[in-house]
Image (cartoon, rainbow, N blue to C red; front, top):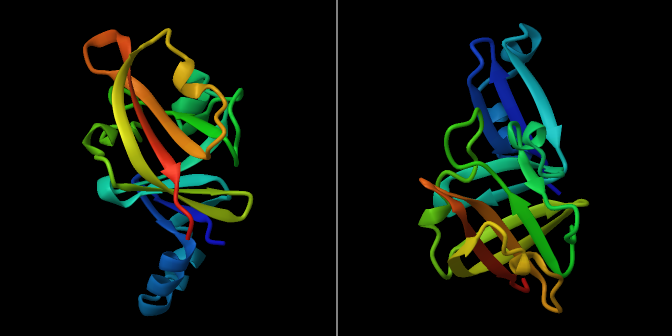
Length: 170
């Protein structure tokens, strides 16, 4: 399974891509020079999300505390990582990392790719709704396999945007 690779150059800008894409480019462009000259620092992640429709590729960590959400997407600890309902949270503006800045653009039928435990899961967006910040029902366990993405609604602190997708068999 591909891992997420984040490349960071000296000025702090990042380039994110999955490892197979990175390796293809590495063969085409001579990245060895960059590696040996320490121009790039790399970090690999085994747990991440990719949403091509909004150009999102981001690491996931356990928990939803500020410290985690300031560097990654957070996993709601009371939800499943693999089967049932997998709940993820992310910032969408105003922080160092705003991975969910464009999830409001997702539409029914768009795909979400979720990588965990050396497996790739493909979800198809089914719903995008606004919920109250106190409504945790969208994170309850389900009999079907789904992914739930939650972020704040701009200028409406009492609401959250909730995007859900169902697992697609490949």
